[in-house]
Picture 1 (cartoon, one colour):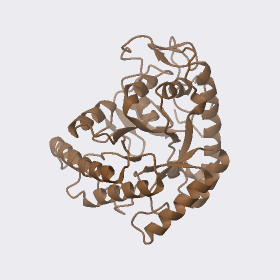
Picture 2 (tube, one colour):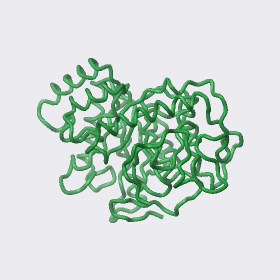
Picture 3 (cartoon, rainbow, N blue to C red):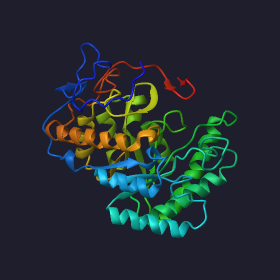
Picture 4 (tube, one colour):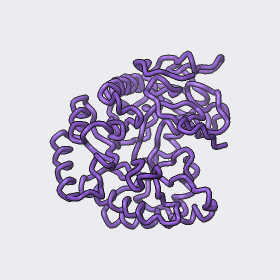
Length: 359
């Protein structure tokens, strides 16, 4: 069903359109092979941020001010045409101005690099590290690392890209490893932490894929993982809290949004299938101290209102998480225990933009 944009449901309440008969309801005592127990970790101490890709119609200065006024602790800054364009003139001066603004507002920052048409006005995200000539992508990522260093960013996040049809799987993989190695070298030189994001439909789309890439690069100390909570629901084989536990040792950046199984569409909280208190409890129990940044890139048309609803929802979810944790009681979850809200899995992943499916 198509979900409109109502005020999201409160965390810890059942979602009647997604809950299945005989399965645990969100916020209740058991979900799959995870049980909720009092937790010693304080989820209310998690640092909440918001992505500027959800404020595409705002000047960056104004977006930062709105987020600070709403009480966010930081920002996930997507380098884009109107938000600290890394290819526009006067970059050094503009970086210094953003650094002063962030400091004045008391906002932490991570750098995101998923701008759609920044490098090619005709092709979204092109070129990636997988294309025949990835030079401009590598230069962009190197600039992002330098910007991150100058801003004191907690992480610089990037992803693999979709494999072009004319490029073989092995060739794409080799290109990815070589490109990532170049970015790792730049990060090492600048003292910047990288967060590589598994992205549905891309060459690296899962935690398992990230582990393979991490190993292929010889496990660089500065090469961590960016975990999108919605992506975990979309395609990972484990309950969402367990996804957090699986990557806890390498977790350097978190994006958060609601999502439905098998559909890569970032949704407002309470309109998807994720039960958030156990997820926030898992982040707290993992000892994660970075930003947990809302990722709603399709909601710029109502950015201030969506950002206000989002922080209210997450604060309520964190309060609930302080009372009910999410701890594993068995080593393995059954294949159908895919999320704390639903056990209905859709084969493959659908992308609403094109309705294409990846099986």
